[in-house]
Image 1 (cartoon, rainbow, N blue to C red):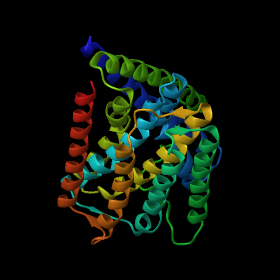
Image 2 (image 1 turned 180 degrees about the vertical axis):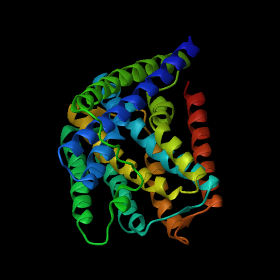
Image 3 (image 1 turned 90 degrees about the horizontal axis):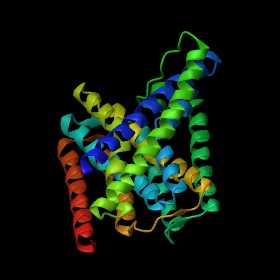
Length: 321
């Protein structure tokens, strides 16, 4: 029974990955065909598209009244992104840090985490609070547009490694990829959420823990694969910008839009989870500032921090079951 559910979980994650890839490729190609600047596409279509698995999964969880999975997905993904993905990439090959991350993006990521605390203080996110978060992602996107117009900032500095697919041969291919991509994201999120709930009930695990671990790690696997490949090619610095950007999108966009669909009740999420997410975001800044590099020892520190967190979740689950 459990093996079958795990197979369906993997299938759901695969559908989410394929859906996001199809959506990004189709929408990017259509945008290029319409004459939109490639930099603008990178800052909007590609950036939003790579966050679609988290967004669709969170919306599906909220609609099914499993708000803890929605919040856990975001918090767990942000923790996983910093502690595991950055940690593994740095272990493979030390990563150089772009100045813009230290000056702008990491402080914005920390600010998003700080804003999340009072919003989630009562363990719920209302539609009004969701609107505030959504305004945050709109402001971040507009800010990136304005920065992109400043002389001296190149497209690759702002997109930070997210490649823009080449246009397809036919506009109907673009439209088909968008439709199929959205369909796969919708179906994949349903498969993932439904089987995650089944697994939680069979094992006696709270939905929040499933969201913080399996779903969070699963929806971050594409970023992990990209970062590992980049590190093997000795270019791990191209991944760090995507990780920081993803964390900003998760709080502002994923939680914002999900709570606009329906208010989120995050019972089961603890302040340990929230403050670890914020703490890792804050710790990342001095790690980046020391020699403008994250070395192997610092990468190992991040991975150990995540293993300690997993141990805490396991012990908490065992003592409450």
